[in-house]
Structure formats: C-alpha cells, structure tokens
Image (cartoon, rainbow, N blue to C red):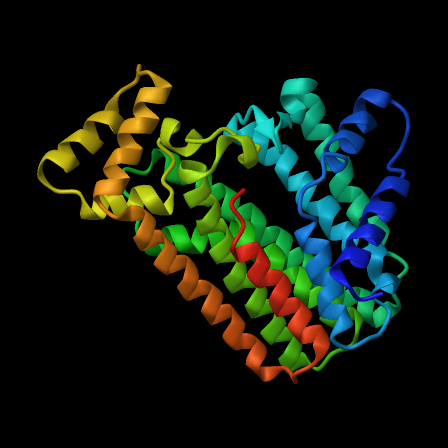
Amino acid sequence: MNSVTSMLSSIEQEIRKQRFGSSPKSLYDPIHYIMGLGGKRLRPLLAMLSYSLYEADSKKIVKYATAVEVFHNFTLLHDDIMDKAPLRRGKPTVHEKWNTNTAILSGDVMQIKVYDQFLDIEGKLLKEVLKALNQCATEVCEGQQWDMEFESMPHVTEQQYLEMIKLKTAVLLGFSLELGALLAKAPVRERKALKEFGINIGIGFQLKDDLLDVYADKAKFGKQVGGDIIANKKTYLLIKAKEKATGKDKKELEAWLSLKKFSKPQKVKAITSLYNRLNIYQTTEQKIQSYFEKGFKQLDTLKDSSQKKSLIAFTRNLINRQS
C-alpha cells in the first residue's frame, strides 16, 4: 500500500467520503467544492510517505493525512479572500462563487473539523500531534500576517521574505512529514530531520511558485499568470530585481511600481522583460535548488530503503513541475 499512486487513490477516497455537515447547504457546499477541486494532495502524500518509512501499511493513517489537506484548504479559503484572488486551481474561488462571509465561515468549520479527525489518536500521541499542529497553525497565521504587512512596507529584504514563506507555506509541509513520523513513533532525531526536510523543500516550492507566476504556461498554471506583477507583490523575483536594477532599468521598474492605472498585459510584459535582462529567472532557480539540496541533505540521517527512495523520487518529480 506504499506506492504514491495507491496512496493518492486512498486519499481521494477518504476525501470523497468525508461528511463535514449538511445544513445549511450554503455553509457546507463551499467546503465540498474546494475539497473537490483536486490539487496535488502534496501534504497528505508527504505524511503517508513519511509514515511508510517505518510502517508497512500507510493506509492506516489516511484519515489523519487528509486532515492536513483539510487544514491546507481552509487556509486557502481565507488567503484567497485576503489576496482578492479570482481563481483557485483554474476555477472561481469560494468568495467569488458564493461571497466573502460564507467563505470565512466555511473556512472556520473546516478548521474545527481538522481537530475532529485527530480525536481518536491514542492519548499521549494525540497531545504530541495537536501540539505540533498548533505550533504549525500559529506560524502559518504569522506568515500570512507578514505577507499582508509587506504590502505596505516600502522595502522588504530577501531574508524577511524567506522567513515569511517559511512560516506561511513551508512549515505545513514540515508538519505533514513530522505527522507521519510521529504516528509511526519514529525516533525524535528522525522526526526532526523529516520536518526540516519538509520546511526546506517547502521554501523551494514557494520560490518555484513565484517563478511560475511569471513564467508558467497559462493553460497549465490554473491561476492568473503575472498576478504577482499586477499586484506589485513583493516576491523573491521583485526583491532581487530591486536589488539588481540600476540606471534605466531601475527607473523603469520604479515607474511601473508607482503607476495606479495601467494595462495589465502591458505591465506583465514590461516587468517580465526587465526580469529577463536582470537574469532574475536564473537567480531564482539557483536559490530554489539550494533549498532543495539543503532539504535532501536532511534525509542523509535516515537509513536507506526503497521507501526513502520513493520519497526522494516523488519530491524530485515535483521539483521539475511546470504548473
């Protein structure tokens, strides 16, 4: 039961059978809608892959692994409101399809249901799982708050940005791997190594998302290409461009960033051309690879096995994605 395909199949089955509630329909339909939009199911897969390093049947923890997916989608519901995002996985976001108040409440219910899914874990282990989840959830909120504060800050450093994406995005991948190891009662040292592996690849994945927001094929991306550029979002790419730009390039960048009214396609094209001149794509790729390699180094502390090879192969496959 340890191939990625069979894990994914069991995750989808578990999600389909989940019953969050039925009435009022307007509260629960958005939950089934966002959970049914698909996605890579990366977090539950990582939890199950982590568990499989120690135990034979990863299906035993599918209920707990999918709880992480529910938590992740709850954060997306609220993030999309804050970001005013029109699309999620190529479909209208919940606040667009219903309304903002409904999206907030549906997200709240999802967060509550996450705890329900963990309640039948045995006593001492339940305490450890909930403590790790609560730390992760708090850090996710801290990361989101920093992300919003960056919008009004005139200057954000590379280090500030990397810390923000670590909190907002990467710690949940770290928790997913930690959860699998916790449920398998793995040694503390290995649990920490798996968590750090998740955090480092999580930072790499977020930087990859920043890159894809500008350079992805629109048909494959499922979100608005160039959305970060349109919103003047202080991504890694923009931070590096502001660092590197001089002379005419600096003036052009500052002019586009200060404009209140502009043609969206024209701005995306102009900023992308500027990024190309400043080699921002290559700079970002190097940073992405450094985090992935740092992550893989954490796995050196784990004994070699076919399950470890599966975890590494799965992660490397994700690294090469183009959407």
